[in-house]
Image (cartoon, rainbow, N blue to C red; front, side, top):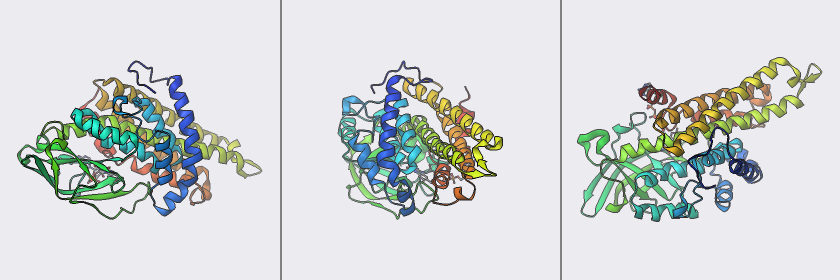
Length: 385
Ligand SMILES: Cc1cc2nc3c(=O)[nH]c(=O)nc-3n(C[C@H](O)[C@H](O)[C@H](O)COP(=O)(O)OP(=O)(O)OC[C@H]3O[C@@H](n4cnc5c(N)ncnc54)[C@H](O)[C@@H]3O)c2cc1C
């Protein structure tokens, strides 16, 4: 899985195909059997975390020098795609481990990388990403969480909202204001640990989908951390947070295409079994055309996502546009494809006895987080190729 900046990402290499086969087998054997219960009970998919960690798939992006698999951006996409195909909540384990830790990889000191990336790679703790706040969502630079210097320490106070895997993760990348006069240039990033005094969590949000992925507030109450936990220079936290999203929006696109593929696969099988008017409904051209459209849109989303992954790996100048475009397009496709999958199952699709309604509910979040699709359009418009 060693990354090569030269690979032709429009056509995955043999090693990517092998990775897909092995993740698919693991996902079907060890994650899929629990997906419905995880959703129904809104509980963390511990089975998925255990299986992914045992197979070293929980954080494949961590570079080899810190004990990770050093997987390239396309390998990361494939892992998330295949896990999301059976359980979107579980796919947030590798996805958010990358989101939370990429600020350290991109901008952190060598000491921070050594300390935290090796722990993440070993499976000693997951990483979460704390940007959003109750009054700062799309306008993330309007955050209020403060970090004030006190000798060799920083003291953090504030509330972060909607934090994925909060409470389960050991490590948190927290963006906080260090100079209120400078707006985005007065924001810095820090690593906060769950065990730091003054860190606590809100009640899990009651959500429409991805119910197995805990989303909670993170409270920072006079959290005093050593100054060397700052990620990069003072005032660079917001830029690091945005640079991170350029790369990780591609993982949300991967999640979207995985969910959509799961729904399409299920619907494809169903229409061959279900008979009406004396024959399988899949024999009707009206049904065949729906499936053709679903597959066409999904493949277009996949190609855009793989292309964006290549740009992420090569650090191309147009990555910001492509990351936003892939996330926006793939998530819209996921919503369309999963809604059509429910339609293809008729009344049965509308019940929890079949997985497609869960996939439709899970798909919705991909249009909202890591920037809503309106925000993606703002990003694209500002970075037109
Ligand atoms: C399940 C879940 C998990 C999440 N995980 C994380 C996480 O791990 N870490 C983290 O930091 N955040 C996380 N988020 C937060 C997420 O990124 C925000 O919810 C998102 O960015 C939108 O912010 P908001 O909810 O405050 O909506 P708002 O910003 O209030 O937006 C409301 C509506 O207004 C629209 N809008 C806003 N501004 C404009 C504009 N300028 N032009 C046009 N339309 C606009 C939006 O598109 C949206 O439709 C998560 C959210 C959810 C629901």
